[in-house]
Image (cartoon, rainbow, N blue to C red; front, side, top):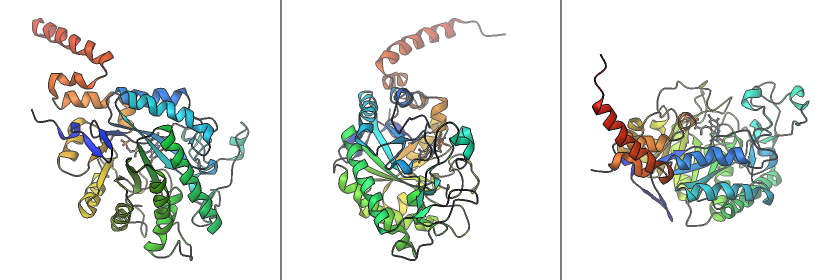
Length: 386
Ligand SMILES: Cc1cc2nc3c(=O)[nH]c(=O)nc-3n(C[C@H](O)[C@H](O)[C@H](O)COP(=O)(O)O)c2cc1C
């Protein structure tokens, strides 16, 4: 048989990825002082066992003030490396490429965890001992009325943040991750520079699109220089703001050209989040695979690999995306929470040889393959239900 497109290995610089299925970064809001714990190991480990080719550790803050919430992971100091290294090691030992999203929340930092309200931290939130902290952004404009007013980063502040990305990248390499991703989406720090709706600067880092892209591109250059040459670099973008006068798909195509010129390997195409949550669907209508056209357009116009994400639910849908050349990798987020074995189930659904059981860890696949034969016998012997 011909191997389904979703299960064709992918060469990325010095890496060979076993298939095109990725777990996208998904914050768990379950860290203490930025440290990964057992939750993160078990949570992420399930997806490596479940056959995913790439497993992303959630948005991991390059600076303490760049956390979205007190529960975010961090990589701003060396003490945070061993717990991340343990996760990366487990993912790799189970056949997945360990990946990490490096992030800075900008003016969307100092928030409540989603289940605490998903808004800016309040005095009541501080009663548990967690403190509101000052936040930074491109301009001194809050996300919305009632949110913290960020401090606009001055040249010294920009240098501090760039240096934080550099040292975080070195730590990510040391921890053993195969892929690093720069988070420049969802209204966080780098996106706040890109969008004309959040960047009101009148220095070299604002104004026209070239000015607004300047700082995110400097960060990407810094990360690429610190990241080993044989390891791929992804950048997540919000392909559109979905707000009148905001960042557009044309802007994203131009940005992707610049990313490609700086050695970025894959553009991870999300959208929205400049105001409010990236998953709330407030700014743009959302249907199945609603962001796939962004990945398709950037891939075609720029000639760079893309990752598609957002309401991709089943194997046939994901297979069609890769087969049609809309994206090179498909990320399965919330549906993977629903089914951590999504990738091995997809292998079966797409008709891989031997019922797809070879894709399972042998600790499970050996048994399930035998059980399947028993079940087939039982089914064929059972009288039809009246
Ligand atoms: C709980 C949760 C946490 C998320 N955290 C992140 C994150 O850390 N970084 C990021 O870029 N996107 C984050 N996202 C967005 C996802 O990566 C993904 O783009 C989104 O869920 C859409 O894909 P899906 O429909 O397959 O879930 C998060 C989404 C969820 C549901």
